Image 1 (spheres, rainbow, N blue to C red):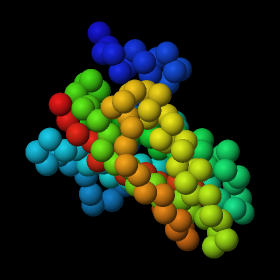
Image 2: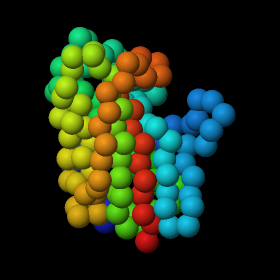
Image 3: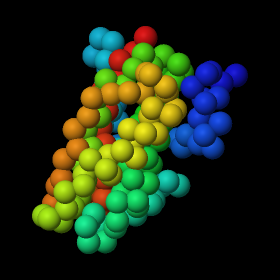
Image 4: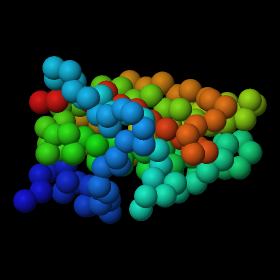
Length: 154
């Protein structure tokens, strides 16, 4: 039986994918006390990036928002793998959003809204969080967005 969070995801039309395995020498999540830290999650769907390239050159803000939402979905997939039950999430404490972008692109915060809006819709008050949105020259596999999270566990 699925919990309240998975029911809400279904209402939003979201099915969590299997949690992505690490691509190098790291773990996909680590727990310390009541905090769960996720490794950076890329905008993967079906094992493939949903978009590639730089914001401000190859992608517009709308596509960047979609990529950020995909990263947030993958964060929840990692949380489910770690916790077994998404209802154990007390709150998303913070996300850090890395946006691969051109030097003159200044709308990283708008791209990050794709993840923030999704987490708030999926988790309600537990999904509201502190956030950093950072522009970077490039990301692994030419991904446009990568997001890591700190999650408090109930």
